[in-house]
Image (cartoon, rainbow, N blue to C red; front, side, top):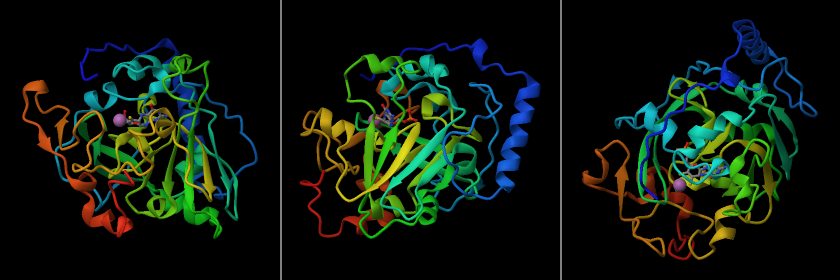
Length: 321
Ligand SMILES: Nc1nc2c(c(=O)[nH]1)N[C@H]1C(S)=C(S)[C@@H](COP(=O)(O)O)O[C@H]1N2
Ligand SMILES: [Mo]
């Protein structure tokens, strides 16, 4: 599971975009930033190619960032979990070039006053982009420090006005067998579904993420838009979002369906509650020097306890794992 193979992934011919098209696209993004921020009905065909070169994306520094050393760009973009592209760590970097990230829409549905289909350009312009350097902890026992770009998911929630019946948010991510070779495997039930309680989703740390390391989100990291929840195991942070649903009942998540005794709904990082098959007390920080490096102690709520522990006051976290 943790064996690291070196991956070479030269730029695909399909990723090389004529400068003319690329520049026109930048103009479109600028125009979208100035336009009224209303949802559009249906997918809008953009005069853009399916695949774009890496595009710069700036984010203002955030007080919610950790000052810990960042995991290298190389590790962040080549050691990934994105089972839609395969289950090996280097599969996403090798296969995600097949993902078409434009046009792209995210459908906001369910118990909200303002449901709608949001074009990705509108989502990008919805709120100022911040750089959030977060510790991330995978349930497999490794961790990274990643400079994400995005804004608090609460910015979107406020604009769509959840109704009183909205208690949870369900995230659905893309499942398209033409683009995602991993869907041939029944390792999970597709589409990948994740969820948060509404107050967790509203927490300022919960990020609607559109980039990392000063550029738009690489495909293997969940382009063009994903969620990032730093106090929970990595699998809560669904990639390549296509729908956000405000619902009354706790969503049935993909990992819970696959192994109900191993993956609960909450999935808060908790060194005191072992996974049924392994301890969660320590972690290996990717980049720390391979398997010989000393492991680090995993922190409650991945080190975000000061900010999030109150969300779980009075709950038995062994039962609500
Ligand atoms: N759609 C989708 N989202 C996903 C996954 C996945 O397989 N499919 N894997 C999850 C897991 S287990 C982890 S650890 C993180 C990894 O994110 P990263 O590769 O950007 O570090 O993505 C999460 N989001
Ligand atoms: Mo993970």
